[in-house]
Length: 425
Image (tube, rainbow, N blue to C red):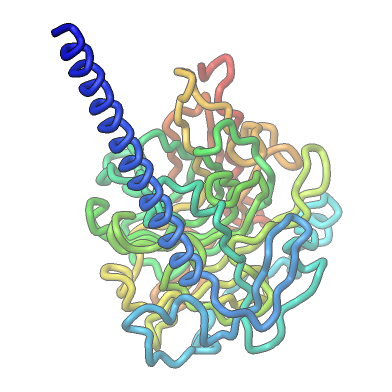
């Protein structure tokens, strides 16, 4: 009898072991299928983003810049752009452009003029006519995103506030996002311009970023916010490093399902073969040293209704087709200029991620970040000084903004800060 019990016990143990082994094999098989499926989806997304190149250029920072035929760029994956004829130049350019070449001798002697600024990949080559430069997306870029669909998109902007007294509608209550900006609202705006000096702010956590940009906004600041954005940013999550890079962004539904950075989805149509969206800017401004700045102009072509972007005085980069938007098919209702950081408070304290130069605006030229020659485009397609310029920051002990005005810089402001400090714990 004891032998029978022993045999029964041994058989049950063996059966349980076989079940566990089968479960383990099934789990491994399922995991293997999941990994295989993920690899397939990543490769499919890479194939969608990385178009066949006429020529490829290895940048000193490790980027690969692909020279892609202008008609093969990602924009034309959009169903409404299948038969689109590329508009190679805007029909109208805003009048009254404040060109750096007109700056007074006194200002230049004070080192107020912008110095030559380029993109790092230019050191190793250029793209031929008829192509556009596109920063190649790598597997690691996508793996850093929370999921494939969120790559290249702002995903935590679900709580954009409606306009309140003293707070512009495009900012505030944004899941730890903090700002130091100047803004105008209450009119119809058909474009905006500014010259911004470029720095390399320190980022505490890889999921945080620091940017300086222009926003053109329209809509109810709820689920249907329209936004066109352009400037420079440091974003380890998006690019895998801490370099300062030129970027653009757009959305027509408050960052929910539409839009993306740079050329990471269908939308922006690039026509320029010299400037790459998302590429590293070089050289950079230094504390007590030379100041390097970029000029950005975004305006609406009154004939075609497309929103154009110009970089510097010479590079018309391309356009966002008007049909991408709802409210911006007409005009913007608010313009914002300034800085933004993510404050994730990962250790229970305010982030040490810097905005701009990482120094407060009261330190002034050569130490603080600035936006100068701020202008808006009016209904007559003229660039003019903004009226009733306001400022906003969530906490001026962390990041601040100070307005100014003079003959050479027109309307300007210094902005930024270090983040966590004795007054911003």
